[in-house]
Amino acid sequence: AQKVTQAQTEISVVEKEDVTLDCVYETRDTTYYLFWYKQPPSGELVFLIRRNSFDEQNEISGRYSWNFQKSTSSFNFTITASQVVDSAVYFCALSEALLAGGTSYGKLTFGQGTILTVHP
Amino acid sequence: NAGVTQTPKFRILKIGQSMTLQCAQDMNHNYMYWYRQDPGMGLKLIYYSVGAGITDKGEVPNGYNVSRSTTEDFPLRLELAAPSQTSVYFCASSWRGALSGANVLTFGAGSRLTVL
Image (tube, rainbow over all chains, first blue to last red; front, side):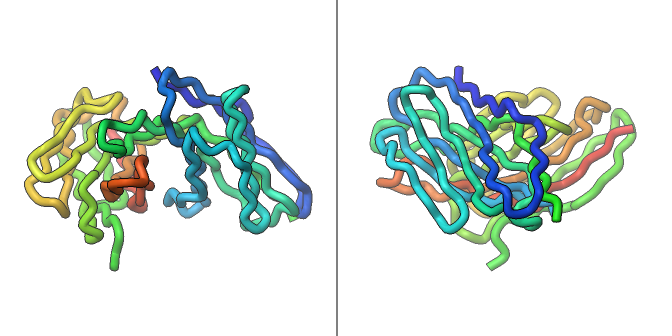
């Protein structure tokens, strides 16, 4: 069975600090996708990034960066120079394996979420 | 382009009552999903559908039913509401990307249900 663990329940930082959110996953699939979603106080879930299991290249997008390490089954998310608007719950998620034909049903297994609070 | 629309946003039910949470998407997505989010927990999949007329159970389907008569709509029915069904419910949809593999989910704004 697939499992996603976000060990950090809550993180509190002061604005401009860097913060890393940890995500560890378990799967027996050799092909899978990992996601990060953000849930701001308004409640909707916003897609941030998707990585596939074939591509361990780390990615940077503005103040956001992601570190995918297959050897340790981790997909960590770092916010550089945090801002108050980054305050939200962040979810890491894992998809099921690709089906024959190269698609999946997109069913996601979510971690418990990490509540990030950035103080001014 | 409204995306994924859920109604109602809030609802209070008495134990034993029934209700339907509505979900509609206007993106012509093949796949639709219902998740529930309990406090301090991640989202758990209740039911999903890969196209009109096709539905399947997720991780926590007990106490719920779904139907998918059209591509656009995917209502979630709660029969005999119980306090354990107090939660925030999210509907989501995704496109069946032929080559990209896993689909990125677009979520609705959520429906907060309280069963007393």
